[in-house]
Length: 269
Image 1: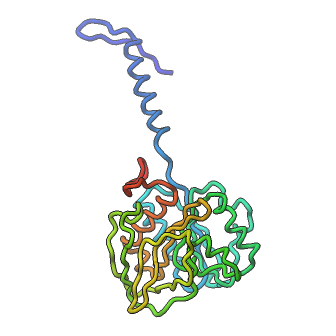
Image 2: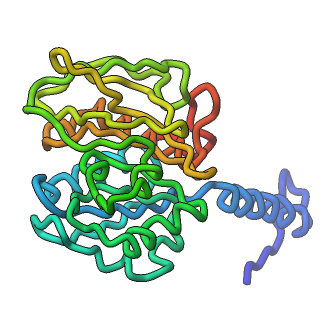
Image 3: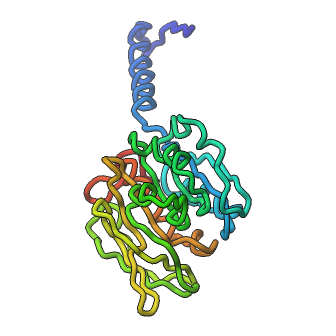
């Protein structure tokens, strides 16, 4: 309980209520500001599997994204270096409940059971945004287009590790505004076997004569999905340009970028 006994000014006593009212105004204003401030995005990063240093990359992503946008990243890392591990949480029909976005950064190409993959896709079909990184494009080859329709592009292979010249082809998109072309260190350029109509290319990557889409968005039956095939090596994942791209992709997937590419209030750092 707050006791206000009154005070005086130049010998004049100030009634207690005149002191108490401004105090209440300040209290209520501070409470309102706290309630209006948006909470950080809640992201689920699923990682693990063959051929990548996921032990280090998960930390690079978690820390690098937190420096750029207000986000809390929970990590599920399973499967060792296998290609056929089934991530345990996917067995729960509500595995994505409570998250604003799911970041798929796994590499399990030999998981081919369609029923299991259908369970992965169900939350995204219900509106949970997604961000797919690198080897996520080569996962879950069930013999159908189910996973590829979610991603927006079907990719089956990559060539030798060589620098990739990245050129943003849609510079007016909210994600790409302000980003500049760059050339990576030695990286894997994923091929494009099929580009679905729902996919919207944002950048191409070139290695010698090979030229493929490497950054794009996908409209998955109304759910926003951001994708990039870049990100094999730790140095690339830690590159500020890569982290900027992924951070902006997350904001777009969660509808936190306006048409001019600026983060909505409370979502910039």
